[in-house]
Amino acid sequence: MSPKGTCPNQHEEERNVRISIGVAVFVSALIVAGAVAAQGVLVDAVADKVIKKYEAASCDQLKALKAEAPSEKEKIGLDLLKADPKARVALVDKIAAPVLNKMFECNMIP
Picture 1 (cartoon, rainbow, N blue to C red):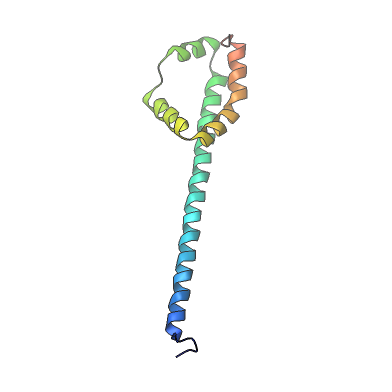
Picture 2: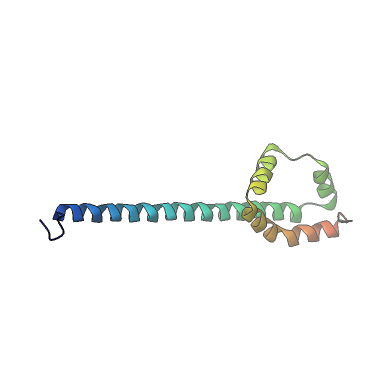
């Protein structure tokens, strides 16, 4: 027996438990970081698509698109942006200037 009344195997088991907890915390942190990075990639892809859509469209096309109801995919995207303020801010920060400039050029801003 060791001086404190515990056996060496108990110390080894405690050490293994601590290591297991540390590994679990590390893996969890990696998963969260991966999800955040994936979300950033998704927001960037959506923003790029929106910007290209506005840059390529004529003013008449944009006015017609504005009058249309959003598609199911667009509704899902809008719901996700409503639920995630950080993603919404990231998207708006990226698309605001090009989209508003095009809307201004097309006299779509009162």
